[in-house]
Image 1 (cartoon, rainbow, N blue to C red):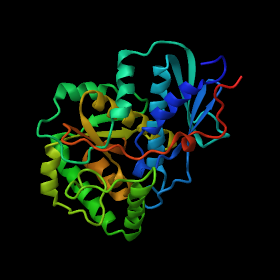
Image 2 (cartoon, rainbow, N blue to C red; image 1 turned 45 degrees about the horizontal axis):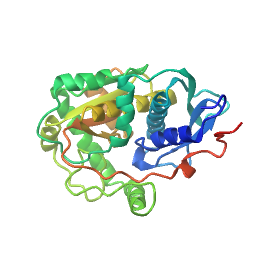
Image 3 (cartoon, rainbow, N blue to C red; image 1 turned 180 degrees about the vertical axis):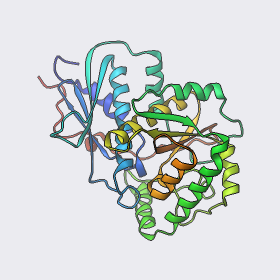
Image 4 (cartoon, one colour; image 1 turned 90 degrees about the vertical axis):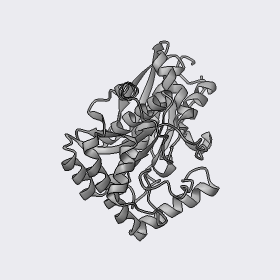
Length: 326
């Protein structure tokens, strides 16, 4: 990097890493601005999902995941990475900033997480029959150290409550016509644009997340048995404001990349957590000390998922970016 600006090759590394972050409905609700020695993540509120994500919680979780990838890219380039959340009150759209400091070689763990960025995909099929070994799961969970964020595996005694919440919420959204129209629009986009969802294969839902009009909903006992054969990790926060949502996304991506680096597959569930009664029921039944923000399914891969569409860098990088300037 030059004295006060990013070089074009470094811009490419950072933008590529950011573009591979997971996002709600693959909406990629972020923009990247590179100025001086800073890489800024901006939230795109124009990419809204009023039925699925009325408060923008998943959008900020998505931006948190992008911020994690930007930090790892800066470390991969060989610089210290100082992360600030919502750094400028006068620019509320800037949700995170990574400032490159002095030269510092990345750790082996950071390099493993960085390499996992490209390999990470959503695995919405059933997992293989072999459960995640407790020692492996412990190492994956221990990777996450984000202030105010809790990460815990779902216990066997939690499964009936989780199955109840998932079946209830699935039924509600399946009969919500406005929700289904919104979901169908984003699924259709996946066929012809560089964002949006690829249609799910029949028979893979709802324990894998999204529920559409074609989803055959199992009863709670059947879903409970399916959940018991998997490993689920719950991400919670002590509070429920924008900073908490951003940090939940930071933790989610760290967890997902750690699972990928360990040779595991994963997919995230947030849809049920947008129903206040379902969310409150999960807090009560699982005796949670905070607010559930996301559920990550983890297991052995049974298929190779095609990469989801991504916008080109020209659409990702803000026009205010300066690169290679003197």
